[in-house]
Amino acid sequence: MRVSRACLLVLLFASVASAQNPLSALKTLEVDGIGSSALLDLNSCQHLAPSPFGAFVPPDVVIMLPVPPFSVTIPGTAFLPPPPRLCPVAVTGASAGSPPHPPGQSTFQLNLNVDFSTYRSNGSGGGCSQASGTLAFTKSAQGNPEQLTMTHAGLVCDTDGIGSPKTYTATYHATGGTRKYAGSSGTGDVAVSFGAETLLHLDGNILFR
Image (tube, rainbow, N blue to C red; front, side, top):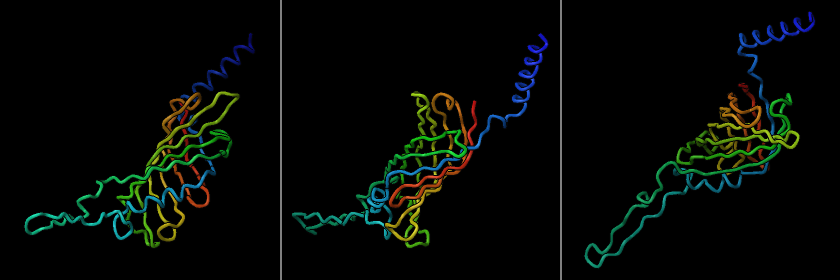
């Protein structure tokens, strides 16, 4: 009987201590991943960037008329697509956390929308564009997949001129997920490099509810 009461008191004390310390539910989140290359997809959108970095400005259009002045020239700028000029990119790959919880050994899905209408010089001979998207980590746990989802926003930058490998530096916001990640939130930094493969590093926190 005394043992049962002692155990009850210990559990009660632990529960009270946890309630008094909100940081007890805030955990470190560190993930590294490697995925398929998306560099060609990003470079294929370069023409959407403003001149002189891109070639998206259509040529002038000359319309012939049956009466004087016999022709009218419409500038190519009149045919420009309005901002944003988005370039969607998707990357899948394998990831692992350190420490392994959370999210542990997982697969990831990175979705990125790069707005090339915001492309500006960054001093490398290339430039940077604003970007945002989603990121999901999925882990199989005894046949029941767990998923952690987040949104992110930052800059995609050329590292050595137009067409060179690129980096994406951003801040993430965890939006929840499934099973133990349901209702979770968090924030931190995301770094991605786009080259022969896509490398991902995430460093931040996650708050369990």
